[in-house]
Amino acid sequence: MTADLPEGWNRVRRVVCPGSFDPVTNGHLDIIGRAARLYDEVVVAVLTNVSKQALFTTDERVEMLREVTAGYRNVQVTRFHGLIVDFCQANDISAIVKGLRAVSDFEYEQMMSQMNYRLAGIETLFMTTNPLYAFLRSSLVKEIARYGGDVDGLVPELVLVRLRDRLESLKQAPGPGGTR
Ligand code: PNS
Image (cartoon, rainbow, N blue to C red; front, side, top):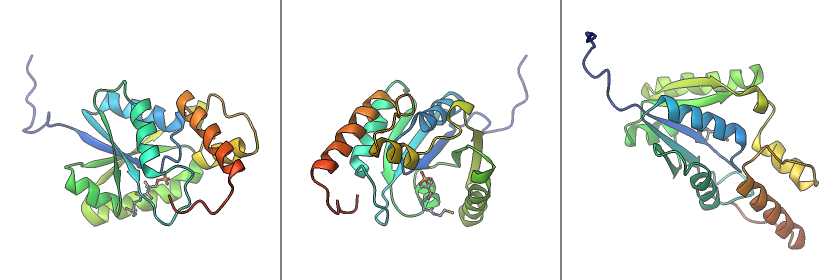
């Protein structure tokens, strides 16, 4: 039976998963993978944040994301700066996909989603995170790894290796490090 579907019902659904990804965690990867199964095209957009002291440069974060999402044919990784709504409009993206870990995430995410909708009519779609990763955030991973704690299983294997290398090289040559 053919459904009487409205015009444009099957248009390409391109969404964005934005973030700092410093570095990408298994929690991010879970959301990206689930978005890739739901939408035709997923753009992972890495914020070039000049005001934030990052452990990895934007290029390094993009490269790691490309490697860990290589198995998804409908995922592309790129960088952006400025407003996410401008990036969405420039790239024909109608919705932002975000993971919600806990109620504590909700308030800030709600403000951002309402602001983005007000600014440009860009929707935000929330997915609750896999409970396995509900406690996971990049900043915690970096802090634990910096003090020698075990972050195995929290980030993809190649990120784990680069994280250890980066922290080791910082130990040997501590310094301001500059803005990444
Ligand atoms: O991984 P993060 O740092 O939690 O990601 C936050 C991010 C990059 C999604 C958010 O800060 C963002 O969209 N920044 C771009 C600037 C912007 O549009 N700000 C207004 C949001 S209402």
